[in-house]
Image 1 (cartoon, one colour):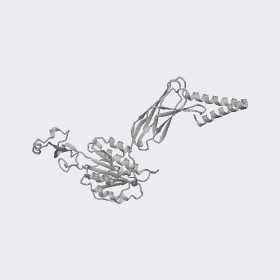
Image 2: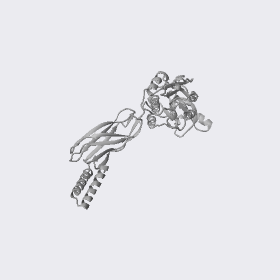
Image 3: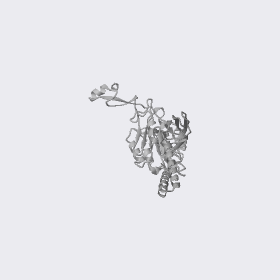
Image 4: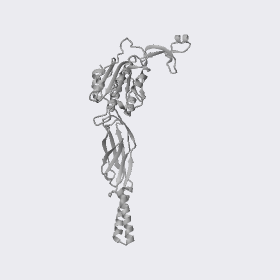
Length: 386
């Protein structure tokens, strides 16, 4: 019941009581008239609705800004005409509305409309809600159709050229602990581990050592990239109408993951909050992009913490660090990883008029300073990927 409906009901009861107490027929008629309107309105919304609605969202995964379409299919399974209805559904902190036309008995139809995908994130699209009202706006009745569906609005992917691997110094390539395990180049002997192929057991060395030893082969032709995203709030400008540098940095990080993960090359994502996704055995970057879909600013941890941890890791072919306004104190820690990675790239997304990082240079580190993801892509393709 609406506030107007409650007021009408109370007014009708009050007029009827007052008419009876004062023996005033006019008040009795007014009270009965108001109560009759209330009963008529209640009967209108209490009657079961013959309207049936279903919904399908395609595609369930879209880049930020790309269209995601909701398809509504509806039908009137009764004999009476169903009046015009408004279908509403919650999408994040927004509400999306579409109009369902008047349907005669047995009639059906469909509607398609876009969902707002300007903001990155993982959203639950709530069931379709249809509110029935009586002609006097005294009563409302809500009915929900379809199920809650999840849609992934992942970061915008800009075109980045793949970084050169530089793995052709020798005929078989460099053999080191940073190379992903494979079956191409012999690197060393190691202890047998449950699950190892028995064909790799080196029986002569095992006999001398008194324990099973297997040949540890590596694949020197397969690149492996580590992408580090700085989540610290202090590195980015506050969101405004002009843009959000953190969102632009997430777009750059996702684009770097997709570019470096081409042809199923493994990629690892590290966040300054300590999260690690992917790794040397990852053949599909979809889980990494999925994680970036829901990532947020976080002041737990620092960029130096992650760079220090990488000094104890196996390393790889390329290291890409994506941050906001550049802190010059971070560059020596990046450069210290030159023995672990063959190429070091730092991307600074800084929307200030005179970004400090634009004047910095550091040996062995390729530095890209840009105001947004598009500018970063242009600079990356012109310099970093050469």
